[in-house]
Every structure is written in C-alpha cells, then in structure tokens.
Image 1: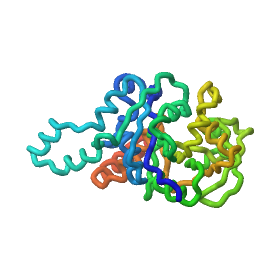
Image 2 (image 1 turned 30 degrees about the horizontal axis):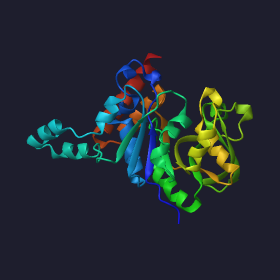
Image 3 (image 1 turned 90 degrees about the horizontal axis):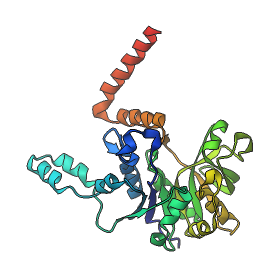
Image 4 (image 1 turned 180 degrees about the vertical axis):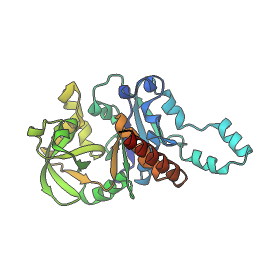
Length: 297
C-alpha cells in the first residue's frame, strides 16, 4: 500500500526582484490577489489534498510571511467585540496549529533543487509534495488534489504539466514523453529550459510536484546545472535510470504565472470576476475603459 502524501514543501526564499520596489519590504508570497495573499491560495490547495505538515524554505526578510500564519489575539478580540463573526471565520483559515508548520532557511540562492534539499531532514523517508506559490491554479478541483488522486494509482514521481507554445520552452522544464495516456503521461526524461529546437516536447513542468524521497538522495549528488543552479528536474530525471517511474499530469484548471507582473494582473482580474460582490463593478469598469480607448484610437 502506498504511503499517503501528508507533507509539502513551499520554496519561498526568492527575493521577488521582478516586483521591486514592493518586495523591498513585503515578501512576494504575501502580495494579494484580491484580498488573499499568494501563499494562502497555496495553503488552501495543500489542505484540500490532505497535506498535514507544511514546510517553508525561507530566507532573510521573510518575517512577515511567518507572522501571517500566527494568531493575532488583538485583532481577533476587536472583531469579536464588534460582532464581526464573518471576518473571524476568514481569519481561521490563516491560522496554523502549533507543530503543523516549520521554517527552514536557505542561506544561498542555489536554485529550486537546493531549496527542496534544505528540507530533507523533515521529509525523512516519505513521499512529499512541492508547491510553488507563484503558480496559482484556478480549477473546480484543486490541482494538487487531482495529482494526489492520480498518484494513488501510479506511485513514483509526478509533476504537473501543461502544453506551452514552442517558443516558451526555454522558460520551463520540459518532458520527454514515453507514453501519452491522456491526463497522465509516462516520461523518458526531463530537460531544463531547452531552446525550442532542442525541446523534446511542448509539455512543460509547472509548480506542483509529488516526489519520492529518492529525489532527495539524488540531490545530494547533483552539481550545478542549467543557469548555474541545482535543478530539481535533474534530480527527478535521475530517478528514471534507477527504475523509479516519472509521470506528467495534465491538470484541469487555469494556471497563472504570478511570478510575473502580467500574470499577477491577469490572476487578479480573473479571481475578482469570480467574486459575486465584485464582478459587476469590475466588468462595468473594464467595459468602460475598453470603449474609451477604442474611441480614442
């Protein structure tokens, strides 16, 4: 019987330089889509998939991220005093039980593989998930939950995958597909950020993973790869030669790259339009400015 996936690593040590000057003092992961920070979407997705232990790989200057998950007695008392029970319920989703969350420092920016490796002692010998909060995925069923259900059938390693335009492959890890079975594909290998002409497919890895502990052992052996960083895709690909299968999972949902300004803005509009109390005003505004700009042209 396969062990359940109950631990997840959240690599959040990045400096968020694409969002300067905001990220000079505010961790990128707590920048908000509508009224919830990016990291809250990631936590909610993990909880829906059955994750019980949350491991954050952080760096200097992330204190506000750690504070976000703590209780706020003064705020809670004020809301209770004013009878704002609805807001108290909202706050509950941001609180983490003692012992459920851990923080580990990544002292050098050596890549995603190195960030995951930093959490190795808390993973021990269990399968685990990795969630990149920059990748926000809107779907009827949360992406990681879809993957956990598929993983129960396949085992091995599993990465979330989506098709991208050939000219975009140089921004992703790309799958070398062995067999396409629909939502699940078996993988011959993975190539990190290939040029379009060198890419084995246009099926790109995005920020959700379910990994065997053997990947952590592979990371022990790895040297710097593409971009001078320790690449997680290299460690996953190394499992294939050890007869540990690797699968790509075509998830159902829309992915937003909130590590980029345009992706963040698109996600903000998309999530706001899903909110009944915001939809009409926002749509009216979008329609008005679109008409005004067309008239001006």
